[in-house]
Length: 70
Image 1 (cartoon, rainbow, N blue to C red):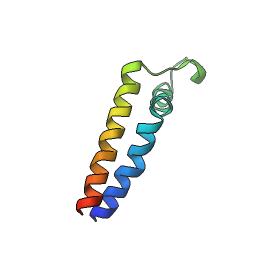
Image 2 (cartoon, rainbow, N blue to C red):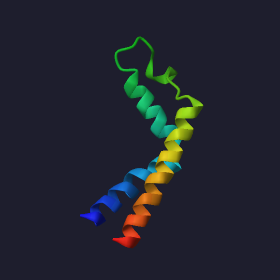
Image 3 (cartoon, rainbow, N blue to C red):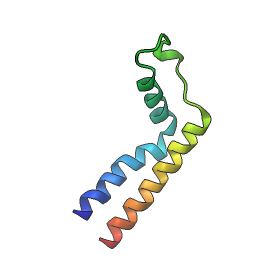
Image 4 (cartoon, rainbow, N blue to C red):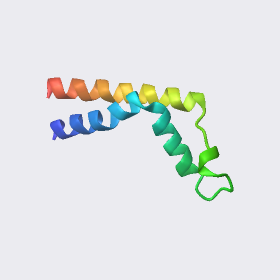
């Protein structure tokens, strides 16, 4: 059970930590569904990119702790 959680945290956290702009942009594009704005015009705010990276690093850290202690 804990091995699965550790692997899930790592699988989700690593892309968030390595490619935060792309992950945040994808989220913004999903949020823009239904608006009149084109997908190509949507850009994530700088704070959103930084938060995405911090959350990704935190998930990797927790995943590694769980993997090493579990």
